[in-house]
Each structure stands twice: as structure tokens, then as C-alpha cells.
Image (cartoon, rainbow, N blue to C red; front, side):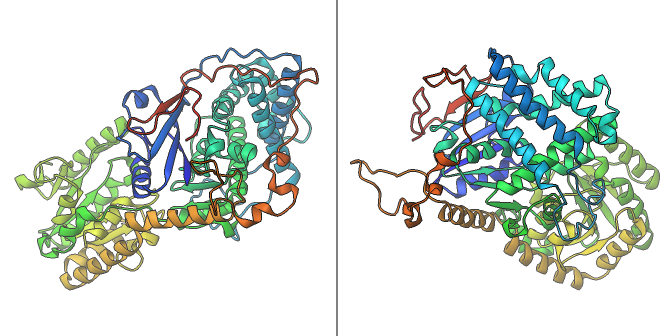
Length: 593
């Protein structure tokens, strides 16, 4: 089958998020074809280039989210009226209803109850009507870039905020707030202006697979709206949660309106998706709280490559019985300060204990935090200098992969009697799973999906509790038999649940199930022009209007005097199509293979 893989700031860019997961998925499903539709987040990301692509990637189409030059589209009077109507309706919905979770959105571990939020169906219909109305307008007229930047958009937001019965935060919006919200909607709705929604574009794929929610899933929604292409949405981190927890310095009006938009978009994405695949139960609870139907949700854990850890996992005797190892990106959320406080208690009980902190800083904030941790370690343990562990200078060392004796993550875990995780915020703990594949006992804080990953194979303590953390570590350092049992159980659990093979097999089964449940949209022909047997399921021949995708499309509102299809303007600047070297050439018209 042909898969349209939708990404935002990820694959195929070298510096992309979740790029490794997407690359493994594409390479693992070599019997399928992939068309990649990717949004870039920065010029630096585009300049960094792509990862090497396998032959099953037929083409890559990219568009930037960080910039959009004018598309040259000038609306006539009727088109301006259509835009004002749809954009005004969108703004009105954002100002008059709160689509957020029933519980506090700032609490990532709140109990979502029975799942889903209470939303007025009429309000949801108004949002989707406005969204798809703007998509229809962009498809008919050639784009929305200039219209979204226009004074008409800001005026529509202003009228919506001053209408009766709006949210208190929206009523207090100032001009600067309206401009900020309009700028954000201009960026969020930029995918509507692309020329991807044609018969030889997303209309030619068998299904769309969005590698995240939010903007990445929007092309999948439009492919379903225009061509009835089914959508699969994978979220290893819930994008909606990010919008609730960011922009702390923005005004209440900006936060409220932006959160309302993304809450509505998430609800529509979950409604239209054939399946939703969170990477863990923590993400699943968020999705259900935000409207996802439990019948559609299938948890698919991230897949890790177990091969690099096989030798270490089968050689537990290589571990230093007195060494604790922490790995990851150094940043405040990892709470290394609490870890150092806990290690002070560990040293008091076990004077021979050592702590290796292995990882580089995450940006300027991480660099400052790393320096603070070095200074704290020097005060706590004056006999140490913070030099690499190989020098044996002190009980605490700060190292990075690639340094002496650390050619890869497996070397980091090889010397560990116990692997530790001290985070106060965590999604899916990739480093912890690597330690499990390496057969090491673990002590972790109870955040994010840690308990789900560890199961009963490691010790879990409350976050920001150095005393409990220290007691758990000391209990394992003093009991080598228990460490061995927990390490063996952890490796068995990781090999069963968290390997690349299980991840690929799960998505392969979902692809087949989605396509099997989707009526055929076109007849496939062989080389002689005859229909391929079994290319169209039997139910595709059952009489009824539902068999004709065109009958479900909303009526166009083109001028009555127009006799031909309206001419389209070029796609927005920097939106590009890239045939993949080595793959079948793509003609200038970009006809699907």
C-alpha cells in the first residue's frame, strides 16, 4: 500500500524530533511505499539536510512553518466575503466555548475520569465547518496566506471577543493580544494553503499516518475531507498538552484563545482518525480527556534497537557493584540537584559508592544547569574534582558519550550496578528502557510513563524526595542477588514490549486493518489496463451514495458565471517537492506512481 507519512519538525530532517522512530518504521516496512509530507521548524533545520532515505520512499514534499512569503493571491469580493464568514465563525467558536480538559490542564498527572470532555456538539460543528470552509476557499482560490495576514482577520477576532457571552479572558483581549493570536492562527493554518490536496498528491495515498497531532495531522484531516483517505495519528507526546503548559508569559486572552483553537483541532483530529496510537498510558489519558474515543485508541510503545545492548545485557558481571549511572540530556527537568542530595545520603551509608552523570547539556539553559550541578557536587564532595570517572579523582563524575571508554550508550550502562532516573517531568523514559535492555536494576521517580515502562522490575520513589531515593539505591547496592533478579526481569520485559520489531509489527497490523475497513476509492489496473483482482473489496460494489467519495464533499461556492475550473496560483513560497534519488522519477506534474 502507499502511505502518506506526515511529520512536523521531524523526519526526514537530520535534526528532527522522532526522526529515528520514523526512519525505523519506514525501513522496517519495505514492502510498502511511503510519500513523506514534512513541515520544517527553522531555516537551520532545513540547512542541516535529510537523513539517508530508503528506496521505498517515493518522494518528499516539504513546507516551512517558520516563514511564509506572500503567495500573490488577490481575492475578489466574493472570496473576501467567504473568508470573512469562515474566519469570523472560527474566531467566534474560540471566544465562546472552552474546549479544554475537564480537570486542570496544568496537572499532567490528573485523573481524567471516564475520558473525553463535555463539548456542545453544535460548537464542534461550527469549528469544523469553519475549518473546512477555509480549506475549500484555499483550494478554490489558491491560498490563504495574504488573507490570514489581513486586517479582516484581526477585525474578525476583535468582533468575536466583544460579542455577548464570550469567555472572560477573551473579553479582556487588547490589540496586542489580538495581533498575537492572529499571528499564531496564521502559522497554524498555513497548511491549508499548500497544493498537497490533489489527486496526484495526498489523494493518491491509501492512508495518512501523522507522526504527531496538531499541525502535522492537519493535512491528514484535509486528505480525509477531500478524498476520504483514512487517518492514523501517533502521539508519543501529546501536542495539546504542550500548548497548555507553554507561553506562561502571555496574557490570559492569548493563552485562552490559542488553547481553545488547539483543543478544537485535537478533538476533530481524534474524531476523524481511524485509530489513535499513543506511546504510553500517560499520553492515552490525555487523549481520552480531550475527546478521543477509547474504541479507537491502541497503545503502541516506542521501539528500541536491542542489538547494541545484547552483549552488556548478557554480561551482568561487568557491572561495578558500587557504581550508580545517570544518563540523558542535562536540563532542570531532570532534577540532578535532588540526585546529588540523594547521593550525599548514599555516600554516608556506602562510602565506596560512585555516581557517573553521563550526558550533554540541552541548550544554553542546560549548560548553565550543568555548571550549577558541578559546583554543587564540588561543595558536597570536596575530594572530587568532577573529572571523568576514568581518572578516579572523586565520587561524582560528569561525562559525555564519545568520551574515554564511552563509545555508545551500552558502555554507559555496562559499569552500572544501578541505573537511576531523577526527573520531575518525563514522557516515555527512553534512557530507562535502554538500561532495562542492558539488564540493569533501576531506581526512578514516579513521573510520566516511568511506572508503565518499569512495571515490577525496578524501584520507583516519589519525585523530589532525596531521602527515599537514597534509601532505594542503598537497598540495591547492598543486595547483589536482588539487583541481578531485577536486572534480568527488566531485560525480559524490555525485549517483550519495547523493541523495534514489536513497534513495526503493531503498525503493520494497523495499516492492514485500516485499509481493510475502508471502502475502495479507485479501481487499480494492471499493466494491460485490466482491473487487479481483489484490489476493490466486495462492499465497494454495494449500491448507495456512500460508495461515491464525491457525493460526500460539501458543495463548492464558485461564482455561477465560472464555466471552467478556476486557475490556481503557485504554491506558497519555499513549499517544495523532492523526488528521492534512486526512486522512480516524478514528473513535473508530480503524478502519483
